[in-house]
Image (cartoon, rainbow, N blue to C red):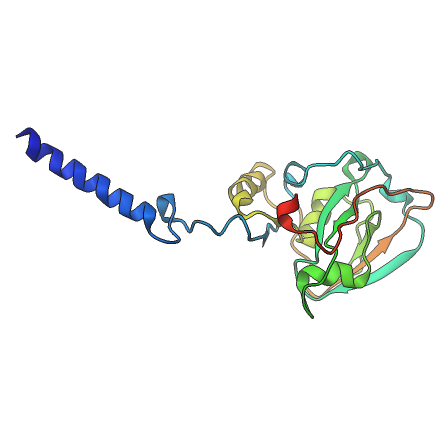
Length: 202
């Protein structure tokens, strides 16, 4: 009787082992091995700072002080190739901090920022003509809809959206015209990403 009872259990164990060894399959039937090298648009400003943590080199700034030279850039599609933004004092406005330092091929979406000469220290002034210079940081992020994140953040992103009661704004329609402005006298000390930079370096 004991042997007969153990056979179904043994069969279940063997079946589970086979499923785990099947190519491209992980637990609960989700694709495995795709997470480490892929990046997707996270499409949310909720808890952006928790996912894109500040760096020691980030200096505080007042977005309203961005009254210097302006640069107009048009992005055809997302993502733009801008890896990280930071909020200004009081959580207002958004400053570019990190830009992917290369364009891998003609028309590479993630090379748009590099090709347009976007650089750290620029403050987002307008998006499709809408003045967002002193807007709430999360609202600016939702309008840009430009966060490139590890897809494993998808669950936390969904929870963050629910926690804050939904998105702060709907994504701006592409192509997206963005005007950046500089802050007179502000010295940006962030990292310039070279052509050999890869997501795995973070």
